[in-house]
Amino acid sequence: MKAVDPSIFKAYDIRGIYPQQIDEDISYRLGRAFIVFLGEERILVGRDMRLSSPSLSRAFIEGARDQGADVVDIGLCSTDMLYFASGDLDLPGAMFTASHNPKEYNGLKLCRRKAGPISEDTGIGEIRELVLKGDLPSAPRRGGLEEKDMLPRYIDHVLGFIDLSVLRPLKVVADAGNGMAGLILPALFERLPCRLVPHCFELDGSFPHHQPSPIEPENIALLQNWVLEAQGDLGMAFDGDADRVFLVDDKGEPVSGSLTTALVARRILQEHPGEKIIYNCINSWIVPETIRAYGGVPIRERVGHSFIKQTMAETGAIFAGEHSGHYYFRDNYRADSGLIAAVYVLEIVSRENRPLSEILKPFKKYYASGEINSRVEDIPAKLEEIARLHSGAKKIDRLDGITVEYDDWWFNVRPSNTEPLLRLNLEAKTRELMEEKRDQLLELIRS
Image (tube, rainbow, N blue to C red):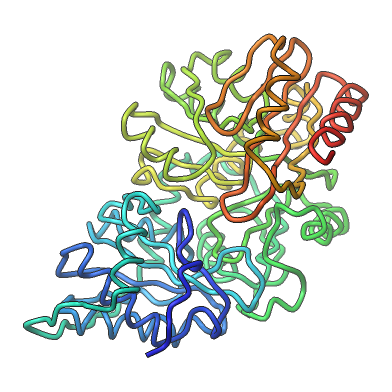
C-alpha cells in the first residue's frame, strides 16, 4: 500500500501532484474515509476536465461504495454546480479538481449536506488521520451508483437570481481557459438574449493556451485583446473549475474583485435594502463604502471560504465577496458562484444601458497594489516588527495577519497557509502614495 504524503491535506481541500502525491489507490482510501467521517449513507461526486479526474473520481466512488454508501455521480461539472447539487439534493459532496493549479495537480473539494464547508478544522484533519492510519471498518453492504445530470437545474437556479426580461443583446467575450466554463457557459447563454464570443472552450486538462488562473494578469491578457477585437460589451474569464470569475470591461481593462463585489452589492441592496453583506479584509475601501451608501450593513471577515460561509450562517448575510473572485449568495446555500455574479453584471449593464467602464467610474476612487508575495523566514517576528513600526496608525487589527489603516492609505500583511510567504495588499487615495508606501513596505518585509 502506497504511503500517503500528509502535505496533500490543505486548509480548505486535498490537493497534490498526480500520480506522485495523489493516485487512484489514495483516492480509493479517501472515498472510504469520507464515508466513515460523515457517517452518511449517500453522497454525490463530480469532477472537472483534468486528465486524471476520471480515474481518480472512479476510484473514490468505488471506495465510498465499498464503505457502504450510495453514490450519485453528476459527472463533469463546475465546483459551484457541485455545491448547488449538494444543496438541491441535500447530500454531502466531493469535487475532483485542483482549481487554478497547473495540469499536473489534482485533488478534492469536500462539503457536507447543503454545501456546508469542510476545512482542516471541521473535517479534513479527521479524514487525514483516517487515511494515514488506514484502519477503516468493514461495511455490511456495498453501495449503489446512480448517474444524474444537474446542469439544466443549475442553469434554472442561476437565472432565478436576475430579471431576464431586462437583458439586452450584449456581446460577451468569454475565456473558459479550457476549464469547466466551456461546458457551463453554452448552456447558460442558450437561455439569454446575449451573444457569446467563446475562447478556449474545449475541455482540455493540459491547458494548451494559458494557466487556468485568471487572477494572474498574464492569464487575462488574451481576453483583454479579444474584448477589444470583438468590440465586446465585457469579458469574462473563469478558473479551471469555473467557480471564480474575473471581468474585463468594454475598454479591455481588468475589473478587480473588489469592484465586482461593490457592483453586485449595490444591485442586491437596491432590491433588498438593509441586508448584511460580508467582505474580506483585503477588499478595497470602496466595498464597505458602497454597502453603507446603499443602506446595507457591511461585515468584515478573514480571507477564506470557510470563514465567510460560517459568518454568513451566523449573521444571515445575503451576499459576500472576496478580492480573489469568489462571490457567495445566501440563496445559493451560502456557496460561492462566479456564474451568479456574472449574470448579475449582465443585468446591471443591461439595466443601466451604458458601458461597463462608465458604470464603474464612481467606484474607482482608490489605487491598489495587488497582492505581492515575499519569502520570509521568520514570519511571526516580521509581523511584530511591522506592527511595532506602525503602532501610531489610525487603526490596527489582527483579524487576518495585520491590517494597518491611516487616513489616506491602508495595508494588510498576512502569512500564506502553505508556504513561508507574506502577502502584502495595499491601497491609497493616489497612485503616487500607493507606490511610495508599497515600496517602503516591501523593503521592510524583505529586509
